[in-house]
Length: 212
Image (cartoon, rainbow, N blue to C red; front, top):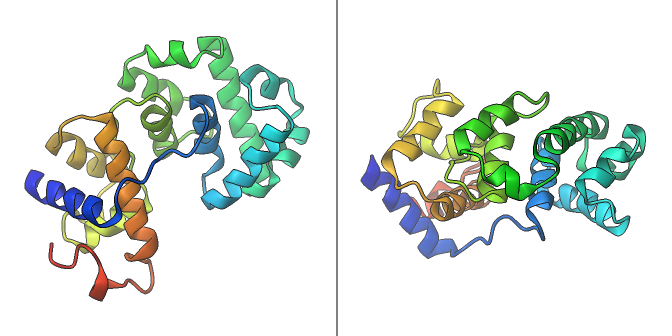
């Protein structure tokens, strides 16, 4: 399994190159983006982030003081804006009260301890929590999404019944724990999923992983 996973990574990297994830100016911006990107495209999240930046609101305490309805209007491009405003405020409350709005303090906590804390926040699921830990804090946790499951399933590496934790263990037990590699690997899988391993009409005939 280790060799298969490494072969996939090397082939994708040689085909697509570095993806430069996560596109953000600060770790806090990554965190906000991870919450807003639930069930929407990144282009929509960028519009919502730009709205926050143009109003100089992309700071935890400033954002938390904003009335929820006002926040919802500003992040409207991200979709499900009322729900996401609540989820964002839930995270902000946790971030301010437990870590005094300090990314540095949050980063000092062990990944699995922090993961459990994030999962206890209403509206934060495994993918969002792991995205924050990996992309904002650079800790080696592998992020699993629909693209990853689809690709591994079609290559016979997992069963359809595999859950998030099952798939995550596949990577974390077979690869060296490296935040840099996990970052790049996940981004490359997303690239493959968007461009080739499509949900309804996969381009198997020209897929970079055709021979793997």
